[in-house]
Image 1 (cartoon, rainbow, N blue to C red):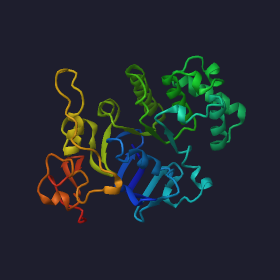
Image 2: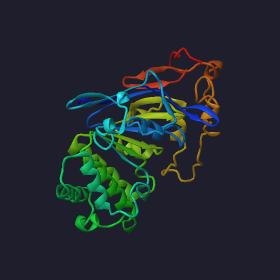
Image 3: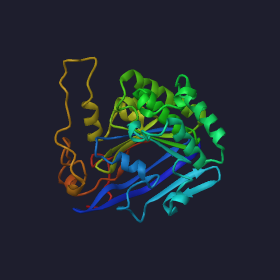
Image 4: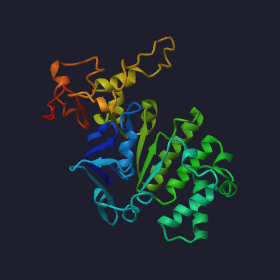
Length: 333
């Protein structure tokens, strides 16, 4: 496999009426072509903001850190995403090399424009296809994602399709430009379990067919266990654990990851009580010093947890965790 994207020291702040808040703090990861990475964490942990940052889709009050570096490796050579300044320059990334699938397609499809017209429009923006060629490819993609009678669906509106079919149409639209990287932002959350399984299988097939990379964003570790090759766990804008999905699920190293897994219902013991993580994720306006998880952690290792930021330490080969139980600090408080 070849390297697809490198994210180094991603830091993102927002200027708000309440002051400047830190949404993403020093996040680094990479992805290979043909690889699926799960990005997991509770709501408010910064997963979607991280994904949008890769395409610089955050609002105008967003301020990127001076050390932030995002490098997209394409056939024509690497692209420094942070150096792209305007919409014309970003077109090679947004909808071109990178496509984004949202959690709820009804919020993405324009309700008064047919599915087909929207697919054709984006193809004519990002490719040199004619309208007829764009229509032909759009119908082909609808067929590829398993939508029956694609020629008819092409002329229908989003509200005329079921939830699972809308999600498939969104995937078809995202894939029609042949992106190198697909970002799937909780694409299965609103679906029932049978449709969810179909969408997961579809995404695996697409990785094999197109050789693309996928960043799969979810709060559901069960979905990640079925889908991803590796996983990155995020809490309050910081990555706290990274590794292969098999290693992280079977042998979680960070107390937060262990808490997420313990909160999952146990089908083999339906009488077992749920064990949620105590407390709530803090507001970014009240970001705790030291380890961001120290206010909820059940394994606090002395006063350093509330003072010093833990750096990543290797727990096992290819498996790292940012916790004082394992290694050094970043030297910041």
